[in-house]
Image 1 (cartoon, one colour):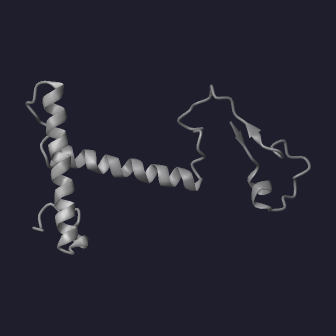
Image 2 (image 1 turned 30 degrees about the vertical axis):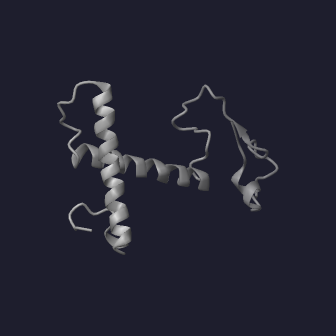
Image 3 (image 1 turned 120 degrees about the vertical axis):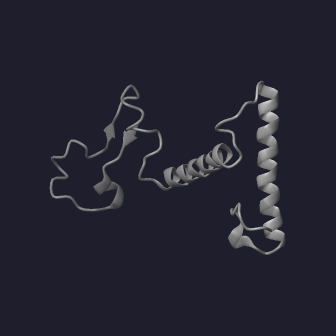
Length: 115
């Protein structure tokens, strides 16, 4: 992976640009720690949009665990578990559609207020 010099990238004049060893950029081998040096730069807009999607999925997973009771379940078998998860996700989507039809978009994710 190659990271470019921030001063050169943003067009900022740097006093030590001629002596800088990172003038053209810095190459980091892929064998380095992938948690620190990710393929997408953490400061980029693409990273932020990708990370927002991840947090949205984590919120859905947390709702499935806590609200729909999947954290402490007694379901045996993968088919039964897939069916139960699919039903829970359909209920979540049906509640959202009901709220949109009733023009209650502000309560779209609420579990307490009736549609």
